[in-house]
Amino acid sequence: MLTVIAINSSHRKKHTHGLIIQIKKILENNNIHVEIINLFDYNIQTCLGCEHCLIKGGCLLKDDTLELMNKMKFADGIILTSPVYLENVSGKLKTFLDKTCSWFHRPEIYGKPVLVVATTKGSGLKFTLQYLKRVVMMWGAFYAGMIGRSIRNIDCEIKQSECDNFIKLLNMEKNNYKPTINNLIYFQVQKVLAYKLAGLDRDYWKEKGWNKEIYYFTCKIGFFKKLVATSFYQFLNKVINS
Ligand SMILES: Cc1cc2nc3c(=O)[nH]c(=O)nc-3n(C[C@H](O)[C@H](O)[C@H](O)COP(=O)(O)O)c2cc1C
Image (cartoon, rainbow, N blue to C red; front, side, top):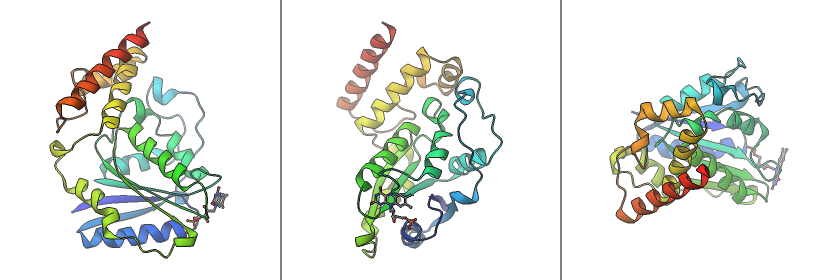
């Protein structure tokens, strides 16, 4: 059975949690198991900014971050959620996201479908969902859609159609994926950075065999997208050299 983890980053089990419960029901009707994780049950300490994770690998802080990152790695998909706080994600979620910085350089959940969800009183919903989408892309994961509600329309029930793409990607063989131009662009940026900037990243990318690739795994990439990705890589490679 496919397993998804849903991360609730509100301290309460109210609006955001309510949406997770609705999505859980829809997914369970599609034979997908959902484990809800309340981020506040986890001890996530603030990033020290030492860059140890980037330069040497691993975090100096002994908290629950690694446990949670491992849960994400072993899940088939992820639902990343947040209440809107000051036009963006909750502080607790941002603290956790900062700790996943190494995944931008050395992607570990590439190709994993992620659905992003947010609730608000009125403002910042679009920005917050877009921000979460950006994080998903930076991880090299597969953005599977967004669901947002303001408390004015919180009773507007989530429809199966809002989860369809997520369900489709969860059930799809990876070699049938069709990466977007954005997916390919993020890959090229990561590749150039890995080869130009940091030794640990370069070794990781070589070990994965990504030096010769235009995406993390073999999948359906049309001629035009291949051309754009290759040209963009060549351009970036030159610019960063000079
Ligand atoms: C610290 C804080 C900051 C908030 N900032 C905003 C905001 O910028 N814009 C907005 O419309 N609502 C804001 N809200 C309201 C929440 O986004 C909204 O009530 C949300 O649905 C709460 O989710 P929850 O019930 O899962 O905790 C804020 C609430 C809190 C507690």
